[in-house]
Length: 302
Image (tube, rainbow, N blue to C red; front, side, top):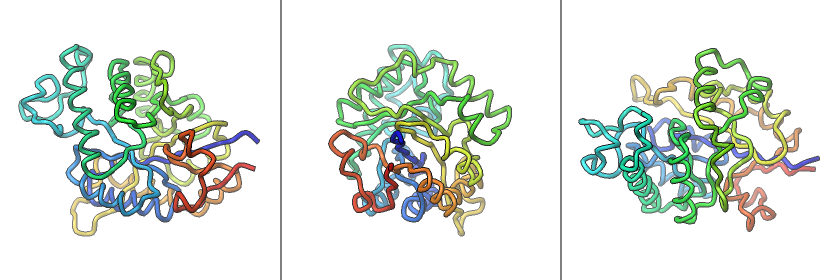
């Protein structure tokens, strides 16, 4: 049987205490193998502390040019931010040399902040898929190699596959995903030589909708090779009204429940899927992965 490796990544690590708690729970008791630190988020330091306490959790940097405020002083980034110092709405003019120069400085600041928090990032990915424009994706790839970060997310989800093997996402989500994919089609023109980029990326079409039913449809049909599924788990905060779970709200609890589901775990095992993180798939580590290293069951292909 061809090998099937599955990276299960939680985005937005650091956005809120409830999201941080959900990420850790999904890793300790569920199938989550990886998380992406949002270095610009208000609870990034707390997330980094949790990551250090859970060394089996693969940690990437969730590069951000579209949410909240930058790491660098806003006044130094006039092409990135508005008069309030928050990131501007995304526009094509971001491809200008001035914009790309500022994007490089801010990307560096976010990577270096992650390093300063004691983390060793395994990969880069992107808040709201904003790097679908080729210039930004190439910039991130170059920085990954410079900083010795081994992997980068493949942003081109196979929408036909996702529609066949997942729940119906609704017309709004489908149109958004089609627009994203047709914008540049990263899989065709943007390469990442020397970096691990999973062949198959899933989760954009079904963001906030990866419940147990969706997982049980997806798992048996995972293609050979390396797949990454993007998730957004979170846990309701008892003392917060409303709970600070970000724009996905209660959908984060639905995704967390699926990541903890015994039925989903059994499906992974019965379909001989290997749960891994980015760093487990680096050439020097691939043959060494076992449950003692990841801190969770790893289901080997047979």
